[in-house]
Amino acid sequence: MRNKFDVAIIGSGPGGYVAAIRASQLGLTVVIIERADIGGICLNWGCIPTKALLRSAELYEFIKKSSDFGIKIKDYSLDLETIIMRSRSVAEKLSTGVKYLLKKNKVEVVKGHGTLLGDSKIKVEEENGKTQTILEAQNIIIATGAKPKQISGLIADGKVVWDYRHALRPKKVPTKLIIVGSGAIGIEFASFYNALGTEVTVIEMQNRILSAEDEEVSSFAKKKFEEKGINFFVESSFKVIQKDSNTISLLVKTQDEEKKIEAPNILIAAGVIGNLENLGLAEIGVKTKLGSILTDKYCQTNVEGIFAIGDVTAPPWLAHKASHEGIMVAEILSGQHDVKPIKTENIPGCTYSIPQIASVGLSEGKAIELGYQVKVGIFPFLANGKALAMGEEEGFIKTIFDKETGELLGAHMVGAEVTELIGAYLVGKELETTSAELINTIFPHPTMSEMLHESVLNAEGQTIHY
Image (cartoon, rainbow, N blue to C red; front, side, top):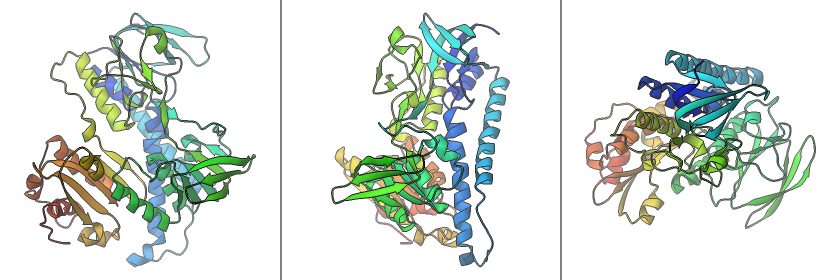
């Protein structure tokens, strides 16, 4: 194997492997250094396997209400082992696919932990610590991702205290589950376990769940989750009263009450922190802050020739952001001069709960805070023919426009398949579309996408079907 490359990438997640493929396509010699699974956390332990689990949960929910569609199913049951096996199989299939793509694109893969040595050198140490390799690269991309934040006194042990890896592979469906954190990870697992019959309680220190979302969406989603039986404590804190090998007891405090809760398992989903350990960052002078590597808008660190992408840098911590950063850096390194930085306001957020949540751009509150005069449109699922036919009448589409220019500032939605519907608005945001242009767009009937159109009509006082 060669030891000198144009680009060396530490980490093979959705940032690292995409950067590697694009760099190779552009004629650069590329090596990826990976200490664990090809495809990273997202593919193996995050985005993909959780969606497979949630699909099983959705089907289980559909079966429960199949009689509404004239289909009576009397005998059905959960097979947790098969649900988990399918989730792992999907992840493994995609990981195998990434390995093939790296090979197809002539990307070298070196297993081990990479440490920066300076002078364009990286030490790669195998897991057993016995074999070391020194690689040289003209440019280095750090794409090591992030890990769950830990809470003092609640270190994940896989028995009572879980992180996302443990929640993906339970030995049995817990009767009760406490989840700390109501971001996308916490809410997705809350939906999954709630659908399987677990009594779920979510503890959130902020004054509302899904605090990154538009307040109206957050409020609606909370109401629907509560209707499904999920319990919430917001603006809350807690302390551990007792913990043994089978259960944990907490005292939860809110502004209005103190309550003791207990469960056989607690899932810590209180955010992530970058994987910075033993990378040699301090030794070569790469600046970090609060568990993230500092970069400019082109993902360049303060050290020439060293870039950082994905969850090891600043939020939002999203796979699609990492991938686009990887492509951007690869194109910069290939010598392209017209590379544009990513517009963070155009990065979508998706939560694959039941119901789903999706958004892009400014919330109504943020737009007003920034001084915009806004026009807001809302269209409910219950007024859409396709949604009614599908039995999915809970949810709404919300659009926010600049009153002066008509520019689309943000879009926020909650309901069935909104993580797919959001795509149309993403194109609109990138093209700086206006309400007038969206109104003149002909959407097919009957589809759920018609709600995108109707929400814009509502913003302009032209609603037809509501």
